[in-house]
Amino acid sequence: GTLEKADEYLAPEFVDHNPFPGQAPTLAGLKAGLTELRTGLPDLQVQIEDAFASADRVVVRSTWTGTNKGPYQGAEPTFRQIRVGAIEIFRLQDGKIVESWRQLDSGELAKQLGLLDQATKAKGEAKPAPRNSSGERRGKTGGILGWLNDL
Image (cartoon, rainbow, N blue to C red; front, side, top):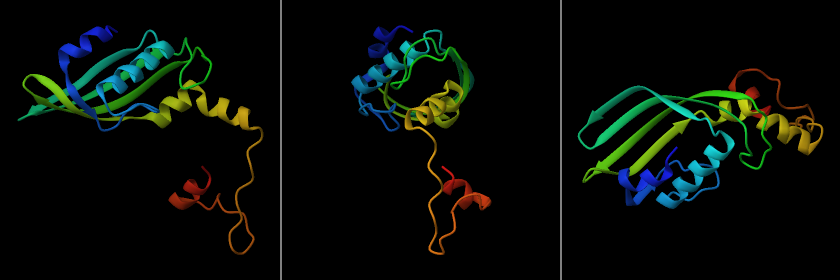
């Protein structure tokens, strides 16, 4: 929670290959994304489950927990608890992180925060599934293609 410490650990030329939504892939973008995350989840805790190092890389598997007590991604607080997993790979150079790749389960985060519910309410009733070339409604077809069509 002490963003000032970022400069101790991250190089000025830091590149975030998976930046937070709406943020630049830079150190400034990471700081802005973390600020937004901490505003939305002021009690955010990151529990490191595993960490491995090889040469100039460190891989961390973690679990993120917190309570949505502030606005996040343009949505009002829901006061819901979240628990999502993440895997991050860091590349180090001269004792500082110069690159990061983060895979956070953002779909699960949006679901737990109720962001999908808020988006649906904001758009009104869901639109019917589009029709295929035969005039039938797509989606609800089962399998991965059916799931993708239902999104």
